[in-house]
Image 1 (cartoon, rainbow, N blue to C red):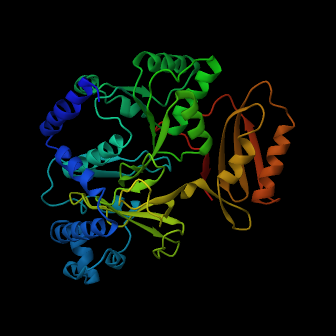
Image 2 (image 1 turned 90 degrees about the vertical axis):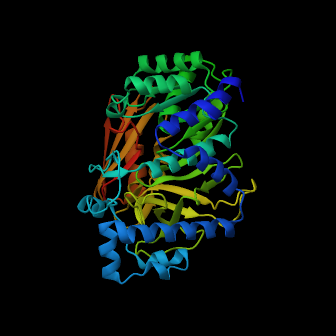
Image 3 (image 1 turned 120 degrees about the vertical axis):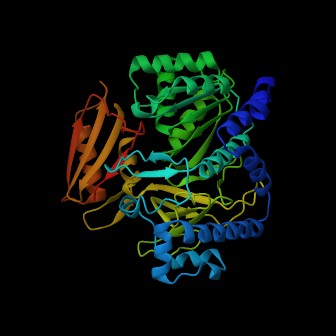
Length: 447
């Protein structure tokens, strides 16, 4: 660790967190101890924290006070994590309908947040200092797994125009102190990409952070320009907020000469899991309970795919208890070779809207369609929108090497997977914009 990085990590950032009334420094130190506990010891801590959360919200959160009374749910009878199954799921619809009732009666200084709303309906919710402190600590712990720390030079490729508009003067100086530079992911023109590459070469960051699609786009542009990026000393690229595809991991790693660390979570659900250098996705089990449920809402065992449901144990100010994320995943059973006792998320298969439905009702992952498109000669980028089971639209950005008869090949391949009666419309477009959040979604299904 360099001298300046040490100064930031051990003094300047702790002072920054103290002034913001966050106890993330002590929490990170505790989390670094907990990660090496046995699985049983961590599970006991989870249960203890779950009881404390439920006891608090049963008294101080009107929504849960009323709900527990209706269900005759006695928090004192909670003996295991499985007792959570006696409670209903919390959905985005529930939150929208009960926003005020979900506030803790003693909560102060709550910050308003919202999800990106890529489904068309942003979710508005609130977060208190306790939750922020735990999220900062969890991310900080995972960052240090890779031999980098707060204060190491960092390039962040992130954000929507709205988020970037919030970069006030105070945050500007904080980012300079932490040696973090933000590049806007929502604008990826040729000239902007040239600027991004020049900035990365100038900064020589120790770490990158961003959407996998955005970092891949920059990496491919560097290849196109013949720019060498492996000599900058980049140690790791942290990616999150989108599904990470194998070819993206390979491209980012090869172009920037670094490891790629996947992260999974969200503003609403919290910091759920992060990849360790041994290649496993560790759940933040000291903060979050994760359940995997099927379409009927039944909890599934390890190794079986289902929707990811989370209970964040540090959200009493605005509780997320059995919150349905809309993401599909699988819990792992085999301990990681790194020795951490934190349980594993074996697979993250994407959002439920990353799956498509064939005409006969068969549900399949969007990769089944992506595989048809990604290796086609002349295709620079693509997006698939399943409007209905009967209509799928394919957006393609192509170059001069794209053969006109390729459209027929695409339509034929899609019909083989979705059904011969399905209408497949291929539109050749100049560009495919990212979502308002700055993310890019390859597959969107409304079916």
